[in-house]
Image (cartoon, rainbow, N blue to C red; front, side, top):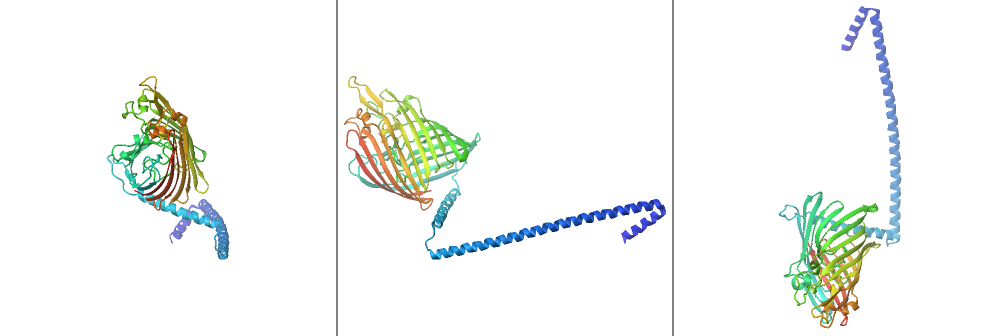
Length: 506
């Protein structure tokens, strides 16, 4: 009604104005009509385009439905063939067996990971610094049967001859503390310490301590993306890997038989450079306070001298290592070369140098196998766990009473281990290690009155074990070791060691 009224009113005004007004009205009406026609044409074109798009989408949908139907028919045909072959041949093909084994391995790995995640989700111990601290450990029971005389029945490394022994101990139980600290200079700070109960009479020579509780290892470090600054009490950098054992924990496996294991105070830096394929080139260097081997820190009066021969020289030992590594820290490929040097001054007033060149490796192999080991050649390596328990030989000068000849002893040795990870919970290990000092060098500085360690020229160990972990917290092991020790002034001695172990991790 309003539009009609306004149209009538406009027409009356045009008639009043005459012909010019009529012309204007006609022009406006023509423009409005043209605009309406243009908008209708555009709408028609858009409608046509939309119709075409809907048609194409419908065609694509129909094509997808046909492909899906074809895939379903093919899948049904494969299922029928599989059912038919299974009925004809009850033994599954090799591919199916392999797939089932992989599925089972994945289930075991998932169970282990879930157990470890549950462990990490526990509440942490409160520390004075208010940063997270975790208490962990391994409660370990070891039983042993030694068929011949050995140096330490619960953790033997040397065959002495004579009667054997049988027993059990829990002194290899390990306690640990791990701590996370603040970020300093853009680096993460953390530390850990490990202790056991193998001190006092349960230790060996210079590595024992008063009482049962004994410090094993300790670490503190600042970690950047590719750089680590650290100080620690641990094995040398030049022997980064260790053989696997649950019965030889207080004294690591193959100790004094090619495994340079001794825990020495050291301070150093590690630098990693990445290159293609996720591999890394690692550079390490450290200063080290090298301890003396057992029964060598004795003065001319026969009393124990509290300062090591490296400390008497007033210069620390130096060690370096260069390595190419894969992207897995604990299981991947690894090939390294290292060097070690330290100056010594004995209680007899003489000086000598100890040195070593080393090569270490770890190579994953097909069939869940892994080959690892370390080799070395050097002189006076008793402070690192070699040298047949000694750095040097000493004898009195017959022409000048009170004077002594001291000579650093050459040394060569190493160890190798083959590991098979049958499953995530079961593994088998076989290893061999040997440490050899030339008998001709030892013979010139020993005699009937010298002790067993001073007369040794070779120590070697064969080892094989089975490790089984039904869960992330429980471990069992059965191990066999054969110790053989050669002396320059006595028959060689041998002993077989059968050990069992049961451990609970917390």
